[in-house]
Length: 111
Image 1 (tube, rainbow, N blue to C red):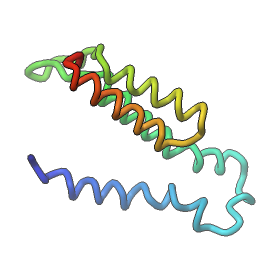
Image 2 (spheres, one colour; image 1 turned 90 degrees about the vertical axis):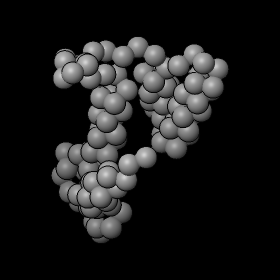
Image 3 (cartoon, one colour; image 1 turned 60 degrees about the vertical axis):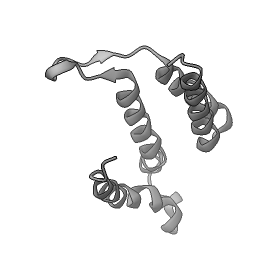
Image 4 (tube, rainbow, N blue to C red; image 1 turned 180 degrees about the horizontal axis):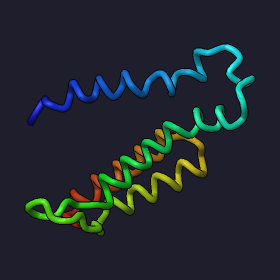
C-alpha cells in the first residue's frame, strides 16, 4: 500500500473546501445572483460525478494506449448511486448502496 496520495488528498481538500463551505459560512449567500448560488450548489456534485465517471467507466490501455470503455459492476454501481441520490437528495445512502453492491458482486465472484 502506497501512502504517496495522502498529501494530494489534503491539497485537493484545501483547494475545494472553500467553494463547498461558502454557502454554510457566508452570511447573506442568498443575496448572490441566482447563477452564482446555482454554481456553488452544483460544483461539488459535478466534481464527484466527473471523478466517478472517469474512474469507473474508462480503463487506460496497456502501455499507454487509448482508454477503453469498461463494462462491469462499477458503472452499474454508479448508476444506482445516481438514482438513489436523485430520489432521496442524500449522498450517503447512494454511496453506501453502491459500495455494498460492488462488495457483494466481488464476494460472489461476479466482478
